[in-house]
Amino acid sequence: MSSILKVDTINEVTSANGVTVDGLSIKDSKLVTADSVVTTNITNSNITNAKLASGSFSNITGTGTLTSFRSTGIDDNADALAMTITSAENIGIGETTPLGKLHIKTGDSGQGTAQGEADELVIEGSANAGINILSGSTSLGMISFGDSGDANIGFIHYNHNNNAMTFRTNTSDTMIIDSSGAITKPLQPAVHAVPNAAQNDMATGIVKIVLGAEVYDINADFNVSNSTFTAPVTGKYMVTSNIDLSDIDTATQWLYGNLLITSNRNYYMNTTDPRKDFSADISRSFNGAAIVDMDANDTLTMNIRSSAHGAAQMNVVFGGGETSLQISLLQ
Image (cartoon, rainbow, N blue to C red; front, side):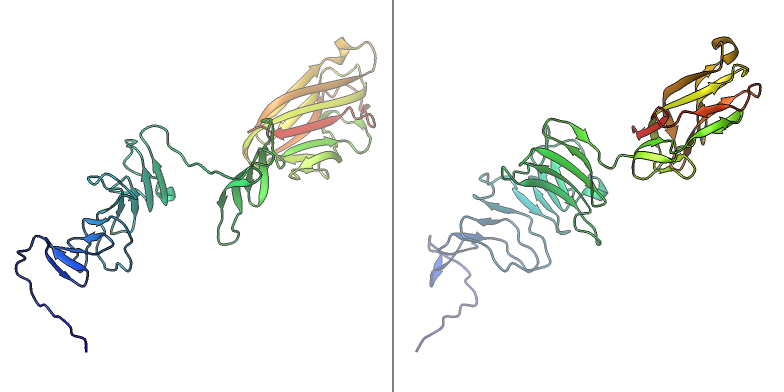
C-alpha cells in the first residue's frame, strides 16, 4: 500500500540543501529538478525571469507576457535579453520592443518605425543589414509574391544553374539578367511597322503614311487598320522613322518629309524646299529620330506635309523596305 505525503505549508527551511521530495527540491523559493530546469516567479498570468539551462519548456499557457527568456543555447550572457515576446505576440531577437511581427536586430539603425505595409519581418543593423538566401549550386533562390488567386503571381529568383536572375510580374517573366549581365525584357513594348501596299499620288497638306504590316509588335500596341500606335503606359518612347518618297514635284514650295503627330505635340523631323533643292522631280528619303513623351493611351502617327503649290504626284516607295516606323519604350 502506497502512501502520499501532503504538505500544506513549509514556513521555513533550515537545511542548506532545502527540502527534497522524490527528486523535486524546494530551495530559496525555487523548484529544482534533475534536468536543471529552474523557474522563478511563476504566476497565473505571467512568467518572468525564466532560465532554461538544459532540457525544454512545454505546455506554458496563460494570458500574460513572457518577458525574459535566457539559455546558453540562445544567449550566453545572463544579463542580456536574447528574445522578447510581447503581449501583441511580436517577437524581437536582440530587440526588446520589436517593430514588426519578427524583428531581428544586430545594431541600432537610428530608425524607430518600420513601414506598415512591410513590417511582418524587420531586419535591422547599425551598418550593413540583409538577408542571405543560400541554395544548391543547380537550384533556385527565390522571393515569391502571391495572393488569393495565385501563389506566385510575381517573384524574383536567382537560378544557380545558369547564374541568371529573373523578375516575374502577373505570371510572366518580364526581365532577365543573364550571367554576362545582359538584360532582356521580353514583354517591353516595341513596334516595327511598314507599308503593305503602294501609296501613290499623295495629296498636298498633311497625309498619313499607311503602315499596314508589322515586322514585330510586342504587346500589340500598333493598329495596322489605321496606322496608329497607342502608348500602353506613360513614359518616354524612342521613335525612329524613315519615309522614302518618289516624284517630288519641284513646284512644291516646302515639304516636311517626316512628321510625327502625337496626342500632345507634333515633331517635324525634316524640311526641304524642292524649288531650290531640286532641279527636277526627284526621289528622296527622309529619316529622323526623337524621344517622344507620351501618356498612357496617347497616339502617334507618321506623316508628311507639303505646300499646295505642287501637284499631287508624290508616291511612297513600296517594296524595298525603306519606309518604316520603329517605336520602343525607354522608361
